[in-house]
Image 1 (tube, rainbow, N blue to C red):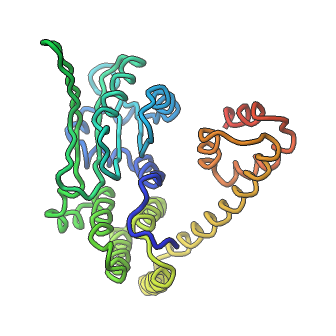
Image 2: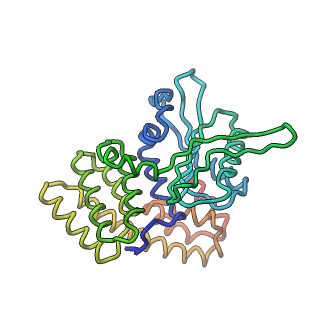
Length: 315
């Protein structure tokens, strides 16, 4: 287990996974004004490929936990909204401009109303981007987005612990990750307390596992304290006769297995296809363990990059 006290901003996958698992709850927690307007019965659709194309065309630099989600409103059969989400982990001078570029490129492509939401997960209380403006000789543009500063929830910490929305626990874990940067023992205690809270609320297995993976990533511990944490959590689980710890341990074993399979597949692909582009690497790393195992079988017939790209397009 890593000794890093705060997650690297490049490691956006846990935020993305949490948003995908709990998207309606994300809206209800961070953008409650939208919840009664959305027709949840019609479902929603994540437009990851579309956002990837837009961000690549925009040349806006490093991407974070961006999610583009299509939802339908209750105002007519054909009315729908794109919700553009940004989770920003560190201060960035060009952030507001990047939000503006994404927004106008999304509108240019889809010509629909857009709700842009920025979740500011940094530890600088004074950095609060919320709009991008340009002006010249009486002509101007202004693009404003919803800006949520996670540090602002510090005064509401007890309410977060009482709130049953999964993102309340996610924000509480984020705040404790910041507060315990220099106190690993206290971090271990809070990691255990937050997991206990999930158990006591009687959440179903998939929800607990989804939140566990997020908290485990956010409140990372050095190896010794991580072992203590696992032992204490196991004792608590056995005392309460809760079956989740077995599932959690399986997650760890499966992730280790996936890492090993992925390493082997990447070596074989390098021999067959040469150097892989960052885009291809990202697509391969996002595959499930079953897909990676299937790739290991079929790549023996590959003759070049085109074969790999064709296979990925079918996944």
